[in-house]
Image (cartoon, rainbow, N blue to C red; front, side):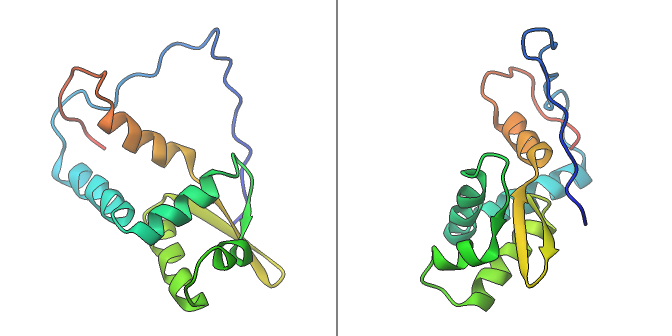
Length: 125
């Protein structure tokens, strides 16, 4: 897996994002969102995600993540796998270390779903 460069959007000229929540969720859409929210329901995974997100677009080595916790390596690996399988983070092996980064589109989808400023209800995920 290689990391792709994300496009830079000029916020002065870009149209506002269309709300994700425009109609009721489909069963598949609800299942996908529920899985991501369930993954974020664990305090360790939430902390791991925040540690990666705090790098603001940079990669975080698994060694840095492991050092930030009082947990074993296999436990951290389990939590990282849950985050990766839910699509919230992605990773790449470089030599003996694995580097993680946030998947902005996935987090944006969760944020849009919870956006209280959007007055429409439900959507397909």
